[in-house]
Length: 100
Image 1 (cartoon, rainbow, N blue to C red):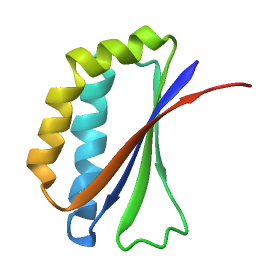
Image 2: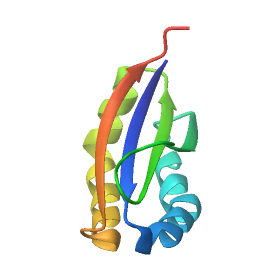
Image 3: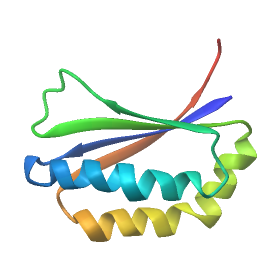
Image 4: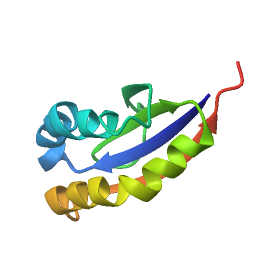
């Protein structure tokens, strides 16, 4: 199994709106793609950056799942996020392999 991890740092002024939108819209839309089997929204503590930092972790079974997501779904979903929150956040993505 694998985890697609998206770490996002956001400014204070969008924090509440972003969190609500992630819970009610974005994460459900990502899960509707069928590429992932589970997700977690985690707050990162003790970050020295200003604002708030979160990790959204999507679990998937095979590398083909993330390839499908990146090819067929990610561009649209990421564009929606960018359009909504513009220059108020920074994000980076990592792939993790679950060992145990």
